[in-house]
Image (tube, rainbow, N blue to C red):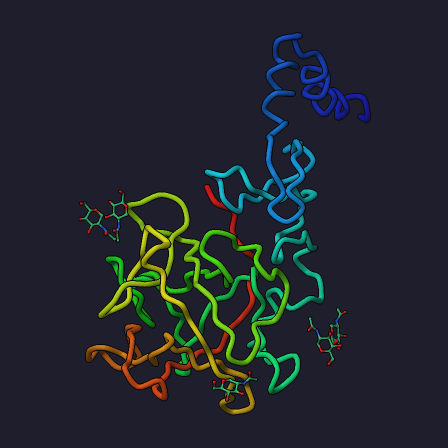
Length: 254
Ligand SMILES: *[C@@H]1O[C@H](CO)[C@@H](O)[C@H](O)[C@H]1NC(C)=O
Ligand SMILES: *[C@@H]1O[C@H](CO)[C@@H](O)[C@H](O)[C@H]1NC(C)=O
Ligand SMILES: *[C@@H]1O[C@H](CO)[C@@H](O)[C@H](O)[C@H]1NC(C)=O
Ligand SMILES: *[C@@H]1O[C@H](CO)[C@@H](O)[C@H](O)[C@H]1NC(C)=O
Ligand SMILES: *[C@@H]1O[C@H](CO)[C@@H](O)[C@H](O)[C@H]1NC(C)=O
């Protein structure tokens, strides 16, 4: 009985253990992907058989090579079930009230409205709460040319940042930026990315951040169905738009 079952189990491993020389070379070449670490600037080769390369900027060849099964948290590789802040589902809170607002540079977040709908894209290129494609992942970048600026540091009270849109333009390529005017929309170019600020607040015991677009504030530019809202710049800096910020793993650029 034993021998009967062991034959079909052994056969596939015997076949794959006999590769031709050319197949072996091909496999080696495929498994090694060159990359440059965006933080250390070290260059290396990521063996994609035993590791996973997360592209931070695919055009510049910047990426982080993580052991298989781990995910990118900022620029660090972590186990996805780690007890860090990534993916707890809890809205982020200030580390020290009056000093920071709770989000960290180079980390990634999804934004939940007060009525529990995620900020995302509509069927076009506008940002909308409770639209056709909710849950866009945003990286908080201190600089549009270098997302490693102030990596892992909390955004200070009065601090500003840019929102890298890790879904990008559906008709474009790579990551994009939150910006524009009127109903804010996906920007291919970082030159039209908007600088964002935020103040801490809370609702029902959960921390939230009310975002604005300095030197102005933020406001929904036009009426939409209840539960839906676009993003827009307000001339009054007191006006802002509230969101619960939940940390999620950053995405790899394709
Ligand atoms: C995660 O952290 C919280 C707060 O520090 C702690 O209460 C909880 O036991 C931790 N969970 C695990 C699985 O380590
Ligand atoms: C968070 O707050 C604690 C306690 O105030 C402090 O020791 C720590 O340095 C802060 N972390 C960061 C990253 O600022
Ligand atoms: C993408 O391009 C198609 C074809 O031009 C167009 O119909 C569609 O509206 C575009 N989508 C976005 C999100 O711009
Ligand atoms: C924030 O900016 C305001 C106005 O410029 C200033 O009065 C306040 O001290 C600043 N707060 C911090 C924590 O930097
Ligand atoms: C982004 O670039 C793509 C490809 O060139 C283009 O189709 C799309 O319209 C651009 N999107 C915006 C918002 O300019």
